[in-house]
Amino acid sequence: MALDPARSSSVRGRALLALGCSVIFLLTSWLWTYLFNLVFALPFGLAAFFARRSAQAIAPEYWAVRWSGWLLAAGVLSALVALALFK
View (cartoon, rainbow, N blue to C red):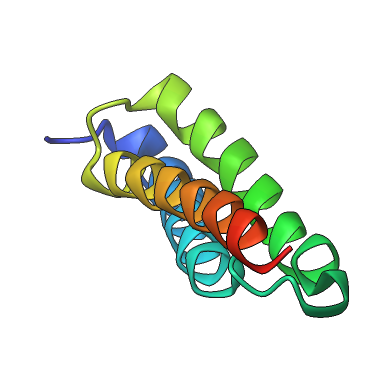
């Protein structure tokens, strides 16, 4: 998808921020030892969610926006499964 040149750097930055935070969230979301998930993973998940939402309002079909959504969903699923298994 071709982005509008005036908005391309803004969307690209927000989408890549969301993608990076989503990856960190996914990798750390299963750690419930001493509530590590709430202290470390949750802020990255929230930052990814709001950055993704901001980028999605401008360019919903951008590849990084779509991937960050899937990674966020996988991170939430991983956190819930780990919480149920290791509680």
